[in-house]
Length: 158
Ligand code: THU
Image 1 (cartoon, rainbow, N blue to C red):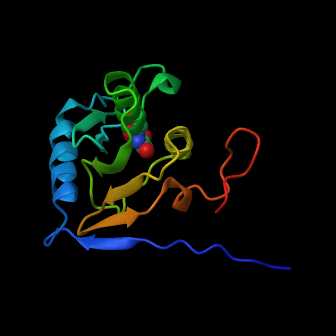
Image 2: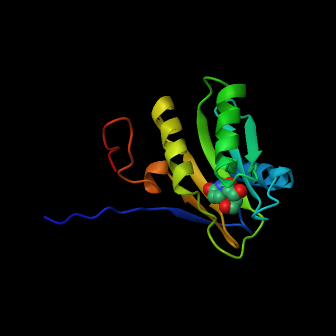
């Protein structure tokens, strides 16, 4: 028996962003790019998170001469939210980069796993917004980017 997984997403025209949350997240992430420390890759990444209080928390990638010690923007932002706003649910995250000629800017596998853990611990989906050149790609959940992910001994349902 052969089955298929379907991944749906929305494309938001950057010239016509109707959702106020998305506009705020985009501004926050783009503003945070200046705080990227990326002398090795020269690739700036920022992630902004919308909490259910309405507050936005953001972070940028922080590199290290020992490459495995580099921290991705998503990990910086999610850890900051868990530390500075414990108990607050994360509703949405928007990820931007300094180089938008490739689209969309997609989180690495490790960051997908980190975000999946946040969804599991808060028991609700996090909308993932990836900024591309002309469009923002909006996914309903990290499950769309990490289907069949590992979650403590069982597969997450697709
Ligand atoms: N990077 C992120 O911050 N997030 C990702 O999801 C992918 C990659 C950073 C890590 C490194 O500082 C730079 O981008 C180049 O890989």
